[in-house]
Every structure is written in structure tokens, then in C-alpha cells.
Amino acid sequence: MDFHFSEEQLQIQSIARDFAQKRIAPVAAEFDKSGEFPLENIQEMGKLGLMGIEVPTEYGGAGMDSISYVLAMIEIAAADCAHSTIMSVNNTLYCNGLLKFGSEEQKNKYVTPIASGEAIGAFALTEPQSGSDATAMRCRAVKQPDGSFIINGKKSWITSGPVAKYILLFAMTDPDKHARGITAFMIDTAREGFHRGKTEPKLGIRASATCEIEFSDYRATPDEVIGEEGHGFKIAMGVLDAGRIGIASQAVGLARAAYEAALEYARERKAFGAPIGSFQMIQQKIADMKCKLDAALLLTLRAAWAKQEAAKNNGRFSTEAAVAKLTASEAAMWITHQAVQVHAGMGYSKEMPLERYFRDAKITEIYEGTSEIQRLVIARNETGLR
Ligand code: CAA
Image 1 (cartoon, protein in one colour):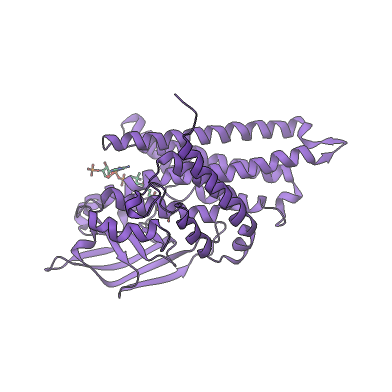
Image 2 (image 1 turned 30 degrees about the vertical axis):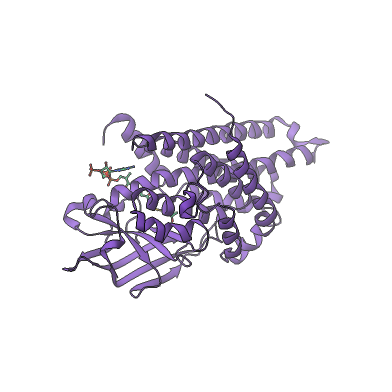
């Protein structure tokens, strides 16, 4: 057991922190207000290696480990949750999926431009009528005599959908086989048959663009199938296990920002002739925030470590990822709530970032598997029962 980070891990943490504090934090409120996609910042993050941290350098990434990814995500999320959402989907749901399941040719073609930040990637699983119950999808890909697939259907809540160049799509190729009838495809958004639908007006992470996408007779060639036909659901679940570590890191970053703001305010704000941090009711909040934050951080690092260990023998880390995501997202929601309370009226004001932290925290309990789904995954794995 060693709680020290390596030089390389500290280096990427420092690069991410520097960029987050200088380039993201000063503009986060403005992007939240306008809902504009922060393209220039994302491209800059790509140049720094932050859009493909675990992607080997030969495919345009930084070639670093999962711990480095967690550390960098925390720094970006502490400055702005929306930036970290875009970063997380690019790094884990998109690049990680292709690295694990794509062919050499697919990795060269589809990972390199996305990991380097030249273009943006997205992941499309959810549909208007299927979220947690992902196998209930209706998007169909019908195999043609020449081996290509004609895709029709709709996907919703697609993070970076409005700006993505490529999308990792999951569609039903054999409905009779349910989970085993789903196949993963690489979608080129410039191709005929791909359409973008309405954008989602959201409570938080407003600068991360989210929209519906639709396919009308979109033709995918056989070399655009990712992994084996019928293995799409397992690919989606495996990718989401990694994605959940990204969301846990995001929640930790957000919670840390809210905690640090509350701590500073508790030291400075005076009431009844003393700093409010000297009152036991505020002290209790500070102590509980600190415990939840540390627990979330350590469980997230453990999940990243478990992912690295699992990669050595092609194993799974679903429980560790779900435990981290559940703990960190609920900690972020609780800590941002308490931080608003410590700031009282100022916490409710748009003059401070607390209300944004509070709005942004909610999504971490919802996307990449709700808290209920995380509990289901953990309990099924622990009991062996379904
Ligand atoms: N890794 C690999 N394979 C897995 C797996 C995993 N983590 N979890 C399940 N599988 C396999 C199972 O072993 C099983 O394989 P066999 O057919 O060989 O037995 C198969 O997948 C089906 O598994 P289940 O029977 O457990 O599937 P289920 O229908 O009961 O669903 C679930 C399980 C946990 C509820 C799953 O559907 C789930 O995680 N749902 C939540 C979906 C989700 O997270 N959506 C988020 C959308 S993406 C998003 O938010 C993106 C964004 O833009 C930010």
C-alpha cells in the first residue's frame, strides 16, 4: 500500500490544474449562462493530452495510466463540471471503448483525431424510451446481403452529440436475442442518414452540448462494426464501467471545489462576533463534508487501480467502479447542498459558483447509470443473486 503518486501522475495533475485555474475557472460562469460549447478550451485540452489520457501516444493520446486520468479529471471538474463531462465522454466512453474493442485500423482512424482533441467523440446507448433498461432499445441495424447494415432509429441524451465527428453507437441487430442481439457501430456524423435532433435544455452542465440523434437508412459498412456482431451490450457495459470512474472523478472534483469554498467562507464570515466556522453546527458540516470527500476520493482511486489490475487478465472491475460512482456522486450532491447552506444567501446567488456546483452535482447521480443502477450492480455482484 502506497499513497504516493508517481512523478508522471503529479505532472498531469499539475498540467490539468494549471489549465483549469487559468483557462476554465474564469469563464465557467459565462459558459454556464450561455450554454455555449467551449470548443477552443476543449481543443487546447486535446493539445495538452487531456482528451485521451490513457490512449497510447501512437494513437494521439498521452499514454498515461488510470490514476493519472482520475487526477486530471478532478482538476478540470473542480473548475467546471461541463468541461469535465466532455472530457470524460471523450476519454472513457469513446476512446476507451475503441481501444479495447476496435481493430488496429479502427484505432488509427477513429481514436487518433479524437484523443488529440482535433475532433470530438460521443457514445449513443440511451433512447427516449430506454435508459436504465438499455436492452429495451429500438434502434435497429439490419444486415444487408453485402454485409453492410442499414440503421434506423433514435438515440437521446447524447453528450457532445451536437458537435461530435464520430459516435460509438449501439443498435439492435437481432431483437430475438435481447442483450446478445446488440451490436456496436462507428458512426460518421457527416454521412447521409445521420441527423441531429433537439438539444436538451438542462439544469446543470449547461455548456456540455446534449442532443437527440436520429438515423434514417444510415448505411454502416462491415468495417464499421466494433467488436463482434452481437457483443454490443457487453461492450457498452464494459465501457460504462470505465466511464463510471470518470464520473466518480468528476463528482470528487466538484465536491472538492464546493468544500474548499465552504471552508474558506466558514473561516471568514462572521456572525454573533465570531467566524461561523467556530460554531458547532458549521463544524459538523465541515467534518462530514471532509469525511465524504476523502471516502469518495479514495474509492475512486481504488476503482482506477482495480481497472488497471483487471486489464492484466481481462477481468472486470464493475463493483469497484459502481461503489466509487455511487459514493462520489452522492457525496457531491450532499457536499454542494451543504456548501450552499454554509454560504446561505450568497450560496443562492449567481454571484458565486455555489449554486452552479449544486445544479451540476445532480447529473452525477443520473448519467452513466443512476444511483439505483449502481446499487443494483453492487448488490447483484455481492449476493450473486438477480
Ligand atoms: N461488463 C461486461 N459484460 C457485462 C457487464 C459488464 N459490466 N454487465 C453485464 N454484462 C453482460 C452479462 O454478463 C450478460 O452476459 P451473458 O448474456 O453472456 O450472460 C449480459 O451482459 C446481460 O447482462 P444482464 O442480464 O445483467 O443485463 P440487464 O439487462 O439485467 O442489465 C444493467 C444490467 C446493470 C441494469 C444494465 O442495463 C445497466 O447498466 N443499465 C444502465 C445503463 C446506463 O448506465 N446508461 C447510461 C447511458 S450512457 C450515458 O449516460 C452517456 C453520457 O452521454 C454521459
